[in-house]
Picture 1: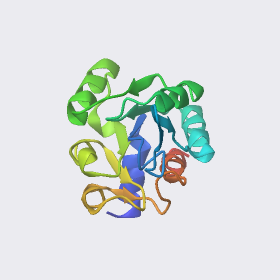
Picture 2 (picture 1 turned 135 degrees about the horizontal axis):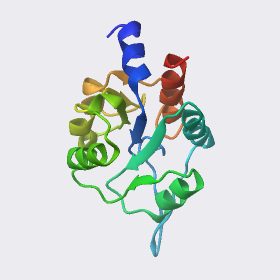
Picture 3 (picture 1 turned 30 degrees about the vertical axis):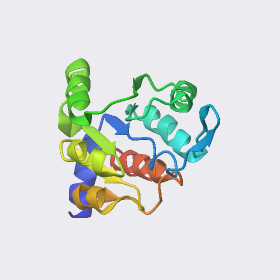
Picture 4 (picture 1 turned 120 degrees about the vertical axis):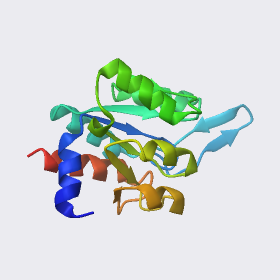
Length: 165
């Protein structure tokens, strides 16, 4: 894909959906006796959410995990499109599209593993962190230089923002 084609796809984006583990985090989870204790999020990714909002692009989370840490992070970032415990991401994408009135071409998704491949193939702009699995890399329009939990979301956000200027 040429840079011009990538910019054209990015310019159309009105909603960025993201997976969590391996994208907003480095994929590590800290467990204690009572289960998940915490996840590490990158503050720069949070600024990416804010910067997208400033250009009229909303952000949502679609993850298979049922994580209180993710819910708290979404609350802090004022992300209302929060979908936890999702096992069928393409079906959830269809629900989001129906609810928002957007077309698939208006949506970007960033994911890192096999459970993201089907939804990556449906959206207008498919992205993955630099350390994503080969499965996600094979279907992504854009592979970030940054790794999951180390600014990959922010990198995608800046690509989209730049395309709209």
